[in-house]
Amino acid sequence: MPKGHKASPRILSVVSDPVLLRTRQEVLIAQGYDADSALPSEVDEKLKSNFHLVILSATLDEEEKARIREKVPAHIKVLNLDTLLWPDELLRMIDTALSDSDQALPN
Image 1: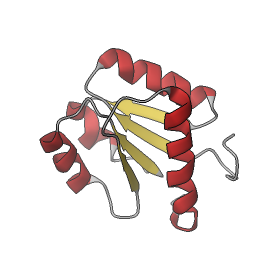
Image 2 (image 1 turned 30 degrees about the vertical axis):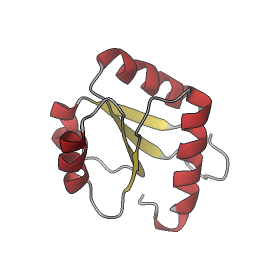
Image 3 (image 1 turned 90 degrees about the horizontal axis):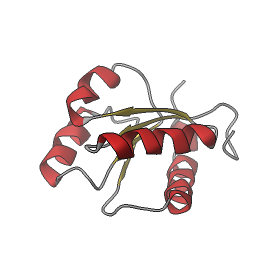
Image 4 (image 1 turned 90 degrees about the vertical axis):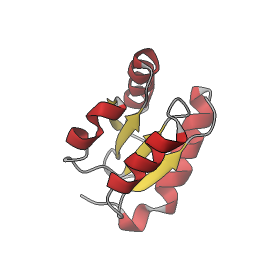
């Protein structure tokens, strides 16, 4: 389980590349996160569930990112990636984003 968290935070990773989508989800699950992933066309359905963090991949164009951000409820943190990252760097960014929003994490 990620440090500093009582329960595994739920993370939705939105990626336009199916290979990166699967790989990122596997990395997040291996680190103890309750991770799900979605292609942009699947976001509406996935957001019917509650998440602590939504990651918008660098593989998404700015219009897609803006459209998705509008749909994410205000209590959910959004991590907007501008470049592809190595897993260790991504995990540090996730930990920071979740730490910054611990007091507002939904159940």
